[in-house]
Amino acid sequence: MTIFIGNLSWETEVEDLEQLFSNYGVVKKCYLPLDRETGRKRGFAFLDLNNQNSEKKAIDDLQDVEWMGREIRVNEAEKRKGPNNKKRNKSYSNNRNLNA
Image 1 (cartoon, rainbow, N blue to C red):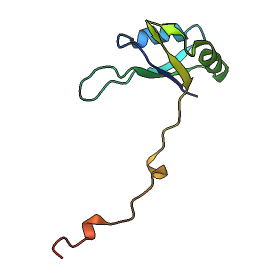
Image 2 (image 1 turned 60 degrees about the vertical axis):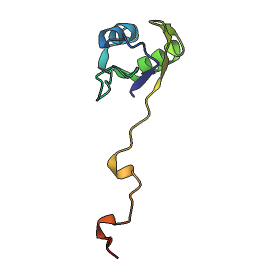
Image 3 (image 1 turned 180 degrees about the horizontal axis):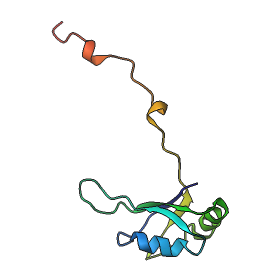
Image 4 (image 1 turned 120 degrees about the horizontal axis):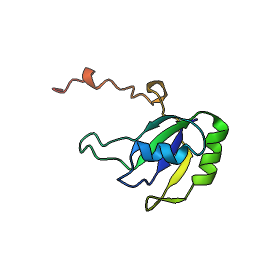
């Protein structure tokens, strides 16, 4: 399971999250996305711990806790839909005659 952490302070660093979640187990992975255009943090992160029981406890304990001046949201991350799960557009726009 991957944990989603939302409503993070803009000053949050990966090391801050690793320290907070290390109370619940070994942090295997932590990702703090940046805006592609501005390079600024987006205010959320994804984190994996070494076992699911630790992840569930962290979610229960840290949900709506004030941390770094913000009330953080902590829950199980939703799985991303892959390209095969997208609804396909069955019209073939490149086959239309625009001069008609």
